[in-house]
Length: 258
Ligand SMILES: O=C(O)CCC(=O)C(=O)O
Image (cartoon, rainbow, N blue to C red; front, side, top):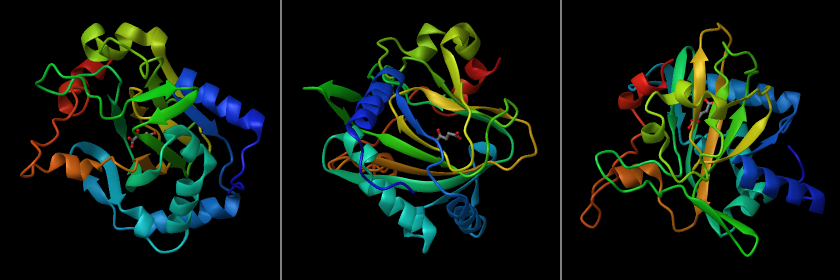
């Protein structure tokens, strides 16, 4: 892992990439031995099948797992890129490991998307720039533990510009991905690469058909006043609960398919 100091040029490059592209890719963030340690840790976690995604398994709270996963969580929490992009005293909102054997990950997030069944925009992950400083409500750090390079490996995918969009993707392009294929971008990653992702960008992953392993770690950070997803989903005395965004869940599948 890299020392936590950013040179001035790096800072400018990172800010530019996050603002214009919605993500920052840091190749070779982990060393070969760190990748091996993280893989062993993930392989020993109790991962559960996702009820909503055939072929995907998840283990949560990995920042509490002993050994390298909690160390990595602490490193990413303190990392200057994380601080730079949130721009405010921050907290960890969620952490998990996922493995995917097959299938695609539906598009989710999106600055302009609607809450399902409502005419309200999902503002839960917005970001903005004020006085040339970035503030983000949700930054997801994706740590890839396997190469995801070929289309059949299920590459990370996103809709260009959607972190700045004013029109909801699924309403503006009712045929989904193929209606907007010129905005569709993929990122090829190698084991040990890390992506700092603006969660207000519509993103997902291509269909995985290869037999290769696909393991990744995710840590979501936000300003200290934000709550994590589980808190949003539980109705309480003082909150009416979170209505998932229109882009999430099975309803989007037919729009996302080619
Ligand atoms: O599988 C990937 O490459 C992306 C994962 C992701 O977007 C997520 O977990 O929210």
